[in-house]
Image 1: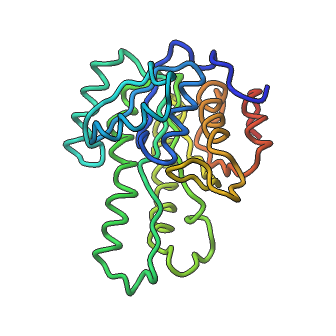
Image 2: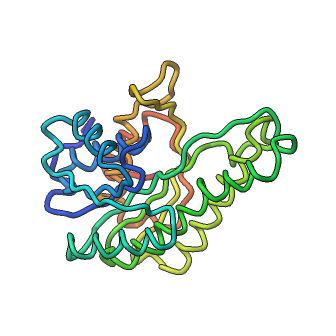
Length: 246
């Protein structure tokens, strides 16, 4: 098996947080190709319309949820809308954060550091708080992380995003310890370069492969819980599609 066949998540409801973003598009695409109905929270109908246009006919199973899951009040509103739209979720993939780089962590100032933490880390907590209670006990919650938080030491310019990424990883581990596998909670550290026009040149993985892996993890990774998965190679995607997560 080299790609999703449309039955892996057929009949299931899923959510992609950050689904209108560069990474989120491929997560939505993966869940749709696995047969799922995909709910996508967004603050902007225009962003959802762009996502629909990009997905083409597959967008028939895309359900927009208007709201800002990046704020405490907004997350409560999104939770209530999702509760009304779905009697039970099976999988959530969360990719609300974007890349950040500056000339210097110290010289950029506290206001910029605070902004990075508030916009890259806090939404992961808010999304988990709002959506985990709605997921089936056998379901899956997966966050998407980047490699910056695992580089020692972080090179100049990425200190703030490295802090946010490392904190995200510990946050998800703590949440996973509390769910004890019902539902499964994992943090996938994705090494792929994805932009608004798709996979960037030189990327170790294509965006479609990232979507394949996350959908396969939700569908087949029934024993995979509280793992930090470094997704760096095509072989991992092939194994995941056959139900193997080394």
